[in-house]
Image 1 (tube, rainbow, N blue to C red):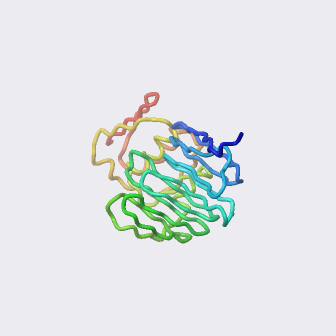
Image 2: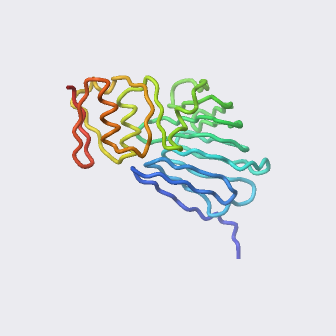
Image 3: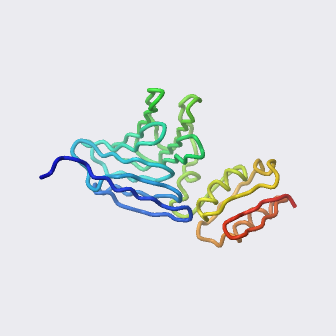
Length: 220
């Protein structure tokens, strides 16, 4: 007999991977590398809930009667029907919600605050700064799901946080100052990694050595 108990699946996407799935209600989810999603085999009555670690883009099937909730380490994102991106990697100590279309509410767990996010805006919860949505170029934050990474005035450290997950490498810096070198550009995901490294390092005085899964960056 059906006890009403919700049975969950957990999908783990390794570093170097990506995955797309469709939930039982028709919601589409794009999973980025090094991410985990816990989701019901079938949604129960009254609500739709999933749990995210890492990064995913959600295209939520509209159903006003059954709200859709994504639980993160710092708070919950509640939706009626919309397209949005959530980034919650453990090593980054913040939850970043970027809204493409629709409307969502972010509810910070410990702070007991709720903030509405509108299309074209992003909310960062790092546990201490004010929860204030900022207007952003959403393509820079959701391009990854289409295999593109667009960055504007990003630091080498920020770029390597993404590339290390995409290509499953560990990055070592010979000089801490290098982490703050700034770049602007557009990377296609499936290009050969060393081609990307050449393009990235040619504009500044950085050299690299790639030994298997280890990437060493040093000044020229």
